[in-house]
Length: 314
Ligand code: FO1
Image (cartoon, rainbow, N blue to C red; front, side, top):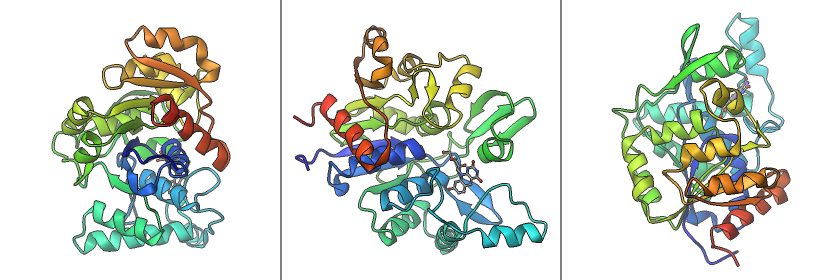
């Protein structure tokens, strides 16, 4: 363990969860805060499901499913029974995962906030990292398509991200307030990391809250972003196709351009090392390191690489 810097991570789902899992092997978990996207949340038969928060919690607890979401080796008895009843089963909730949504929804019905319910889930799972929803208010991501506006999971899971998109919007952003602790975690940390998450539907919803965006800009922390694009492809998910459709360069450089006014240092993968001078030309520091988070050791190595590049490890 190093001398503990306070690290805050702007987090989407799976990429962020893996980065955080590596980080907590290097920095004491109590020094780490994850500010999580809630734009992917959905109402599933009346239950509140928070996929990004859950991927972070499950991964930090070491129980995540093989694809990075849900619970490892989960059963699907409930889903199969629902199918037998003719219910909608396009969103695959497993039985152990279902317990999380029942627990969370029960707490929300008892007037707890999403932050409080999330803290209770983290405690129950023995997660030492502080996991915060960016807001306790409704803040959905809406995907604009030729078929009309779609809720994120409707686009991503139900339609297999196969409908061409024309834009992304955050209708809750003007009224959603940052959850307690979010602004302080961004302003008062030593190292602020933008996780290797989808810039358009994981990080943009966080920055869509004007106060969060301002806190990032005002933060005295060292601000680092990791590229979710490696060798011109997304490590996971629909980021590459989304970037291309919305007119962004599908490369680490394209992502660096999106974050240039917010960060100090951009971390890209060694396979993209030739882009370092172009990233530097944007006025950013840039470093190419191994960013492949395969296995627990791989995740730790990436966390160490980032901490070293940012000057927090010798
Ligand atoms: N992703 C899928 O591709 N298919 C699913 O059926 C699915 C179910 C699911 C259930 C709970 C959960 O927390 C996540 C789930 N995901 C599923 C993943 C999720 O849609 C995305 O990975 C994130 O929203 C993107 O960050």
